[in-house]
Length: 299
Picture 1 (spheres, rainbow, N blue to C red):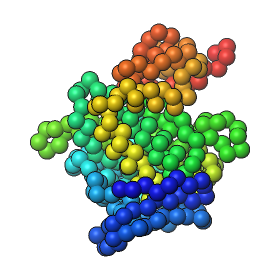
Picture 2: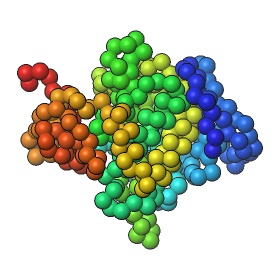
Picture 3: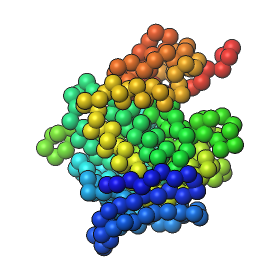
């Protein structure tokens, strides 16, 4: 797959090099938008084209959860896309729904080929991939909130990289023959208006100044995801450094709420070699956290 040159919003271009056909391949296809495109239904042939030959796309007009569908038949290289997801799941089984046509919701099944000890790095690799794909596709500045929230900034300059535009849920499941694979669920707020956002801390690509087609966003993220996961086995230090460089949590006072009701407060000092957040000298894994919040002075 060949990604087109990144273009500033409005518009996102993605160029492919295979001939157009009803089976989903397309020659010199450029997906470019100059008017709000996100309310148009997703097209299977376009999704297959932008995904490229390494992925098999299954499009559902409406689905409760793409992660649940992918986990039910976890074949590596499969991407389950929902045009409208009605019961998406986030971390700690938090449920959410997006207004039809305003978000990109999908789950990719990956065979990372990693030892068990390195699996905690997969959510970080996915976060780097989503941030990189969005940045290349839309031109917006992106950052990361540990462990795997993707942030973008306000085009008016108020609070750089402070709005959540995408979230990631990674689950480990077994194939029919017992091999472990990763189901990486990704949700991107593409064209939500302020009234449609689920929480005040969320935003959308449209509100960040990027008027972009959902299919192009899918292609950019899948390309970046393939690169990051393939390189994780041999370039983990490079991945960790890029994650640290993009992580807006580091250097700030935070409150980490734990499942037992306790909390850890202090400066977010580092991301260690296992992808854990180090706060006040304590290393905390993503699976051990309910919330990570900025700590207000005097709180």
